Amino acid sequence: MIDLNEVLQEEKKLRFSEFSNQIALEFAAEVERIINAESDKPVAVRVTLDEQTILDYRTNKRQGSGWLTRKVKKVIKAQHSSMFVFLNQTKDPFQNWIGDESYAVCGGGFPLYINDQLRGVLAVSGLNHQDDHRVLVTALNKIIK
Image 1 (cartoon, one colour):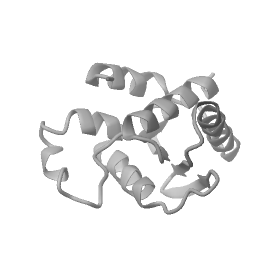
Image 2: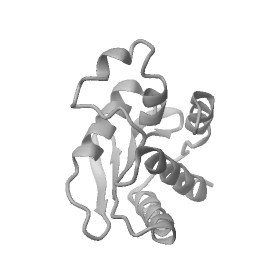
Image 3: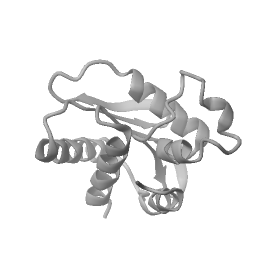
């Protein structure tokens, strides 16, 4: 199981100097490659930038976007990955979010930092939440140069 310090290191390392719709597509394609190599489970990917959804993609037979919406909201509010919030949920200020169903207290949402400014969110949903986080981070490691 991933620990809080590892998640914080990922958040510090996996940042962009620039970001575009093309990079969002590369991210979604990399997520799909990873999923196809590991399982046949359908997943959904969302990328937001400057409060706009710039990519909303579902692999075969994936329905709905409720979890993605909740993960995105959690990352924006916490300014950390949703996995960070999950691992740190017994500590304030996150304690009061545990029962709020408009936020997802689970892995799979990741802050999109460009030049050290939080500008959006990358989110994956469809696997168990630890795997959502792992796949997301693996894809980011592949595309960030």
